[in-house]
Image (cartoon, rainbow, N blue to C red; front, side, top):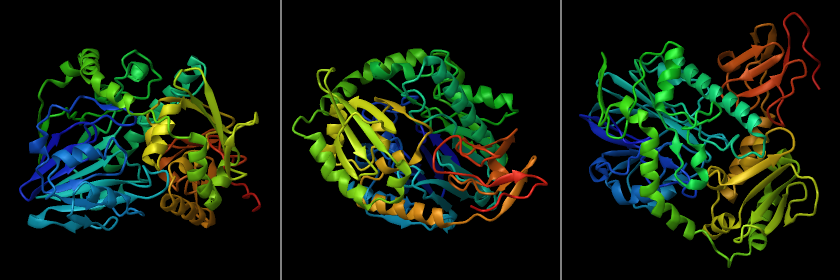
Length: 521
């Protein structure tokens, strides 16, 4: 089995029975904030796109690059579709001209022509990608590969049960806006960032240890930030709180925990994987490339500057009455929302900075009152500050997912009262009736579900499933004193009270070993 690195989470898998192109991303994403690093735009995409099968894990725009898919990927390719709860992915592929689809069933192995086998595990909670994420397992001639990309399954036993995996490709770096955009003192940002960076690596080590593959390939990150306004987010300043460590940092950290089987794929690297080993060739030496990272970024910044400026010029739509359009689009969704509105539990404020850089229009999405209105000097649960032009553009194009557009762009600042609230971001990911109905149904089902099974961790008896997204705490739970941490997403709980220390709306059932459990409330 041959794996060719094509940048970020993208790769081409070649076997004698057929080829699969995965997650090709080349064009800038999220308001021209994210670019693939290392740069993959100079690869021979005409050749790389001439494949038998196409797999895109989910609809994040650093995985689903519509312009690139339309131009470079053969429309004769069969699209391997994860079993997602909505038809959005298939609909988007059809709009791009793809007509051949294999609609897989979750966690069912499919044998394709020539003995090539694939299985897709679809994750379908509202917090997985844009309503769904997935991983691809491939087997040919006894060689097995897992492309986990940036999916976060509760465990990897489903793949391990299919036989020993020889190549494990997974995310290790950050892909979010926290804590950089929060209005916090620099020392606090660094402390929170270091905590998140350590948690990212801890989760990665857990996945690697679960699968015990022969070879581990760090993929799906980090992006690079080439706009001058965002340049500081690149991990080139010695900031221990930067959440975007690159592949060379991965190898260093992996070695600290005994990892010796890591392989980096640069764009154009080729790894020949067999049941007995892997031989990898690179376009340039990996150590040399990352030693010159700053120079590579600076060269990319100058080369991509016209692209960024052209994108910026397209954002302004002064004809859009933002308040009026938000009311028209959002208030019907608020009326339909039960669980998300209750979960947010208060007003959320948007401060929109005008073209002059000084004037500000403040708009509130009032979840309890189910209305969008001008800000009225009240306390708010969350406050976001961003350019008016960005919101105009979102409304102009009818964007249904502000999380995977505006928020991932990092072109905003934020403040909040109290703990992180997942329902805020879940709602702004679901700005369509189809998405909202799915999310409401998901939360309804999980609120009614009762997890009766308990496990013992250290001196505590706790419910087996994390109340956040049902991760198995026997695998991901760590107890330190009176606190429980779920390593899958880093959520923390105070065990004596059961209270979640990371977010609102969740509570864990727990009591000390040898003591009676608390009475049900």
